[in-house]
Length: 182
Image (cartoon, rainbow, N blue to C red; front, side, top):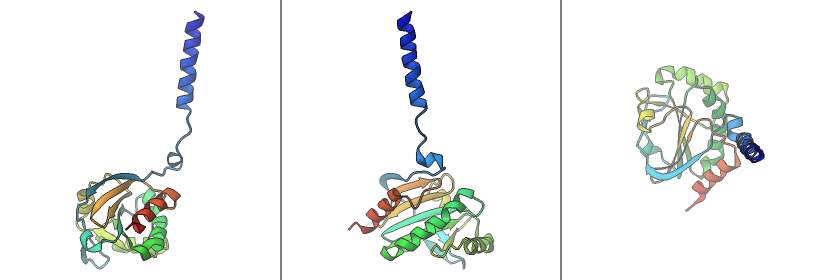
């Protein structure tokens, strides 16, 4: 009988240790990690600028391009957009292009412009999905915010689904590695 209790207590202790592990930092503050993926061709998504001029990813590429889907009514999007603006400002001189596509729709361009001004977003240019969600669907995004990291060859090399900590050292390291490599 003693062996059964000892064995049971060992199993109970193992379960307690396993289930009381600390919560990962990104889960504690509702941030998600950057998922580095095997390079895979990314579709040539189409979008418009504030004036309604049609643009495409192919004509907007840099050394590293981030295609970022967001909306003014998406709370995590609103939280992370100022950080993404800082990233664009910091790395645009070395070739980073951030294409921030609002899913608010071109009909709400005044709302988006007011949001950009109110939040002091100075480096990101707002773009819009051509036909409500065509670019979003073509990219196979599952929710917002979602960011796709596209190399100069047009391959997706990473994805972030959810609010990313743009100012984290690991995120900066990934960006710098891909911007400065030859």
